[in-house]
Image (tube, rainbow, N blue to C red; front, top):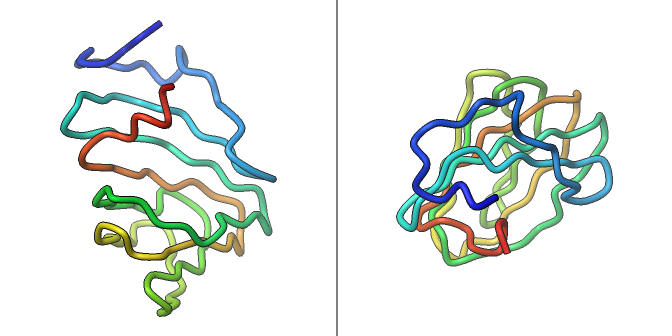
Length: 113
């Protein structure tokens, strides 16, 4: 079911989708201009270095992550956040199992295709 432009999302109604070894995601709410996604990492899981044209703002909901953006790595814990500029190479190494909440602008069409 296409939830684009639906203003509400109940977490219990949304399925986790595989997003790599030890990584899963739930697309929460979205419209053309913005998208919110929850990303769950098992201990030791890696979000490989990549880039995309979207601006990304992320919140560490739980766990410990080493986040690298444009060659700079910082360890972040629950409550910390980061912003990724368009086309910047970035990635994540999970130190302690946890979850990120990512917001993209514009939305990631590739997450719903």
